Each structure stands twice: as structure tokens, then as C-alpha cells.
Image (tube, rainbow, N blue to C red):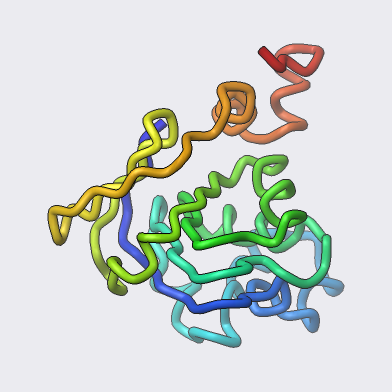
Amino acid sequence: MIIKGRAWKFGNNISTDHIIPGKYKFKTLDFRELAQHAMEGIDSEFSRRVQPGDIIVAGRNFGCGSSREQAPLVLKHAGVGAVVARSFARIFFRNSINVGLPVVICPEAYEAVEQGDLLEVNLAEGMLKNLSKGTVFNFKPLPDFLLKILLDGGLVEHYKMHGKFIWE
């Protein structure tokens, strides 16, 4: 699984309310509409400028805050191909896999990537390439069963496809 896109750089402690402000997440369940407000408290242009496959690169504790699945779903519907961070809030990490949004822990990437760099993330090999700068970073690849869930589009889609959870 290879994801290629431009980098969007955000700092530490990006909460689920930064990802989708609370004033929107209770008004509708239409994720195409919610995606129009993704990250607007930090970057008001994000939802208009993000392209399919683009990659968020963030600092520590990305996705802290509430446990709702809206945050990773909004990013996925906005077109984000993956999120690479120094660390994630545990519930955000889990919710991201469950909804089919790839998440990668790669602490070195934060300092080495600049906004707009062209990145390539190879989930199976555990490799992040900064194609703009010619640098490569390794990260611990996700286990095969998580890759299967991501490839199937998330946990619900995985179950629909297989009629059970495949863990091996």
C-alpha cells in the first residue's frame, strides 16, 4: 500500500476539535459537508486546497480529545491519504484504522518535512520518502491484519467483505 501526496504540516496536540470543530459535528452526519470544515480552526484554506492522497505530518499527540470517529472520517472524506505523526492519541489511532484512514508513527519525519513537500508512504515496507528532498525515513510497519483492514476500507467494510474478522 503506497500513498503519495503533498505534505500538510501541523504541530503538537492537534485535537479532534481542531480536526472538526464541535460547532459542526452535531449538525449533520453528511461527511462530505463536514469535510468542508476540516482543520479550519488551524488552516482556513485546508479543506479547499487539500488534494486526494495528501498527507498530514504532525507532531506529538495528534487526535487528542474526544473519542468520536468523526475526526478521522472527516479527514478521509476531505481526501487525506494518511497521517504521519510523532505520536497519536490512542483512540484516534484506533478509530483511524477502523474507518480506513492510514496512520503512521514516524517521529523523525516532523522535523524533516516542510509544508508542500511531495511524500510517499509505503505502509507495508515501513518507509516514508520525501521525494522533494530525496530523504527516506523508516517506521515500524503496521501488522498485516491492520493493513488488510485498511485495504478493505476500514473495519466495517472488512467484515462485510469477509463475513468475519481476519486476523492472520
